[in-house]
Image 1: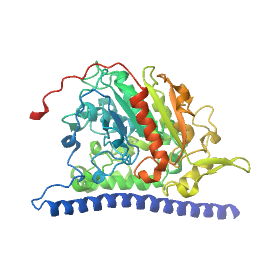
Image 2 (image 1 turned 120 degrees about the vertical axis):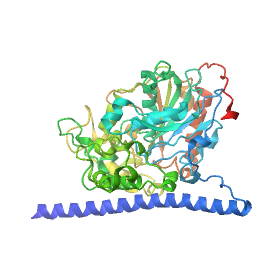
Image 3 (image 1 turned 180 degrees about the vertical axis):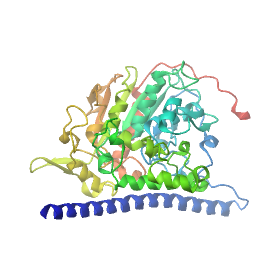
Image 4 (image 1 turned 120 degrees about the horizontal axis):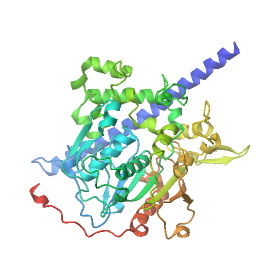
Length: 483
């Protein structure tokens, strides 16, 4: 009787937690979306008042990034800022800046718009073609295994078409974006891009910077609904979701969003699953039922049926699978900024949230849950200890953000004072631990306070002052006046 009462109480608490989490997350999403729409409508009204003949207000989302492509001459390596999960690039959400305007700190910065929920693999492929130009090729083998089209959108003109070994880039990834840029560099090394296979190398990347990056996964993936147990024969039990969880709400919402396929809505925001062909124009009403139920009977319809989306890559096992193939290259400079909103306090040295009043509402509950979470069965890797993963920023574990650790630890140096590690050496992860939550460096610059400028100034300073490689003279660009 007592066990039943306890189970009922736990179920009630779980339902209340899920309801609260759903309300907070959906409320924040609608707030951001509504803010973007209102800003665009206001800008359009002002523009019409000033220009009775019509026109499009500055900042209104454009039809495609190709129209606003920035062609850089290669004289200075550009800094490419890559967003994380649920993020967006330039041209989405009415011109709202995911990086809260940090891109304005340098005049050679690119902010690509990649799929906000697509897998690390798919986003790395998209990023290559965003920079170099051409039609996105997800790879024949991967596309077949994942049940989606091999080809995606076309960049008629890349945003950095001169990109090569002599004209490299600095890559900066926030959250899941950190794994995207690392995998892209590995793909460049392995020559995985058809038509470019004989030309690419890891030296196309001058530096890699992880900002609150998911380098080793996060325990939040399990709290939000990923199964931590790995008890099936093919070793992919961790890909599936619990029947009732926050990620199930996310799954249903993104499926409906893509099925509706409303052009004006897609201009504002895009989960990135177009290559799965989930539009109502393609699958019809019956197809929607299949998608919502998890597949077409063969388990090959939609990203959630095949596991080809971002959250499986954010589990500890998923990150380990990526890390097993991604190297830290001896000629590249690596930096990491690991955020933390917890502290160890008595009694017993328990880890609890710090700076409670400054934690973002989206993260407040998760900071506490991640402090107390324990792996339910076995261990995800040899040497795993729950206490190592207690410190967190509300989305990722601080232990995970410092440098790649699993399945093999990469060379690293903790930085207390910048002057202590100069001159910098390539092939080593230089990491700092920053007292901030996961949202401190995105969306709202004012929330980040002094830390916002300190961190971004450090990132841009590293790229412009401390990372060097002799480069070739700027190439002669084709005449763009005819394009």
